[in-house]
Image (cartoon, rainbow, N blue to C red; front, top):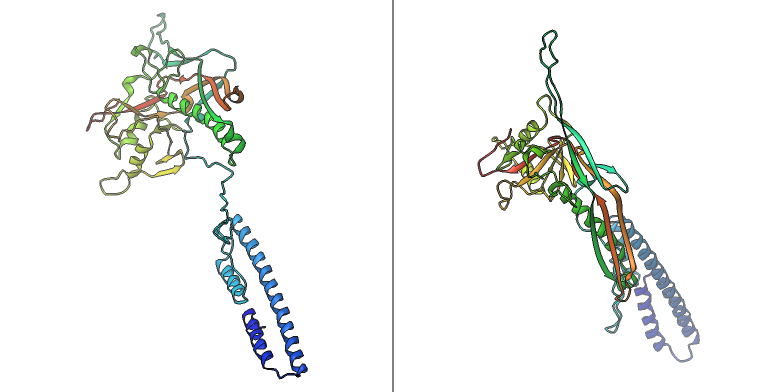
Length: 398
């Protein structure tokens, strides 16, 4: 079957031959005319086929792009385009949205995605891992715990029994209100093609969670505040975490993890199921740490915000300072290791996110507010061991 180009070339030849036909040779003219009409019909058919093929190719290419990269064989696409070009048709190269520019006066369409991509994970998962105590409508919460046990003793016949009283303490948690608020112009909600309104609404919940994650570690305690794991009361007698058990390190080396694990807990056992809370920079230091023979000191398995260091679970929390950061001053708390259930967070009112179009109706602003009533404190005596930065070349602990 001849191509469109060849058929058009034959038409031009027929035109030349028609001029050379002798006057009165009607039979010759009719033959040329019939052949010309036949060629025109074939050209029209070929062009229609090429257009249909192009439409089919564009539809298949669009479906492949929707399905994902690699869904269409590039070689097949190239072959189809080549065949269309050979047949005298037109070929379009599509990159997502197809626009054909026909002149300099063409208006270029501007396209906007209909969703808003989130950024990197903005908050630690620690807030989801501590022990939540639902207490709707409450004002405060106290948790009792044993600080120490007595020890029995030999007793003579008829003598009084040896005194062996346990020592108790309690953790106090009072209601505190944490909020986050932001506004958006009503034009964003009404006119923007992307769902910025939902993204802004979600952001206030993220903001509240970020604050809770900070306070679980660094809360200053007292009225209207959470007590953080790094909190020390004014009097050592009120310590829930005995500050004398704090471990001080100046750098992360091949012994650091063992020092933390074996300094945690009582004298009778090594605690399992404990979690190390640390800064991402210090996690990197664990991953890069080498033994004297050059082998890696630790096997670090990462899974987003959590993972394992030699089988020990960790959680990244940016509220922790980094031991390995030059700007971190000596004496600054950097890590904590313990059972996460040893930190309790009473929730007096669930997280609530509200959207209002009435508060600033005149200004055309939509208000978003998130709030939670909660408290928090370490709920077990020496429930965590804390690691702080020591002066250079100094490592101490109990």
